[in-house]
Length: 205
Image 1 (cartoon, rainbow, N blue to C red):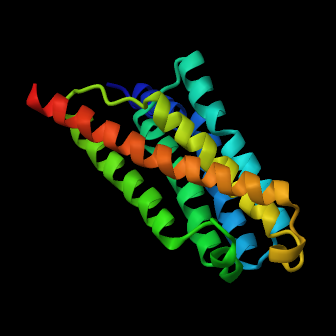
Image 2 (cartoon, rainbow, N blue to C red):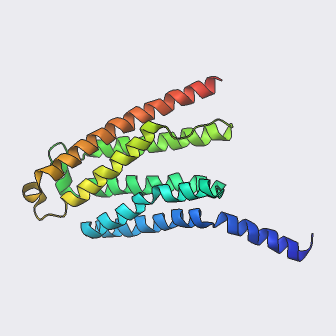
Image 3 (cartoon, one colour):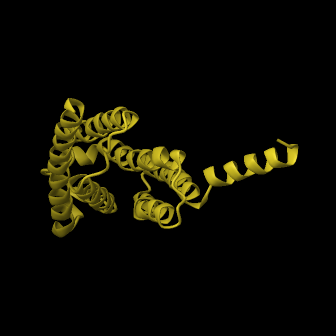
């Protein structure tokens, strides 16, 4: 093989790896980093904007990759990784805010443990089973879980906008936070159990 053809092959592989969907995924990780810095600085307005952009473009990279045949191994790894970094990281930063532990029926440390633990478990199961050639694609409960987790994070960030939020935050924001949070936790547990049963079924085959 000539040097020119080898260079063309290498450049082509590089273009496929760093295609548009993967660039979007990487940009979501950068947005997540900026969001975490803003949360650490208690700039919840900026945090809300960056979380909304990062979570709102979750569908874009996957849709574009499937639509235009640009699915890559790197993208299959990075896309769910970015989702987990954005959502789990947001919950970890939120539970560290002292006022959140005082919100009636609000975010608690055990909820974050459940959310993060479920993601680690499902990631480990998916990695193992897909190596065996089994189909372990996302289920509807898992997708709904992600939706309600994002709603809960957004509601929590809006809740923290107000001075003395325990007193000044409107009731509808508190209600949105509580309902979305508990539904998210319930779906997190339910979908996690579903993945475990699916994994056991596949392993028995």
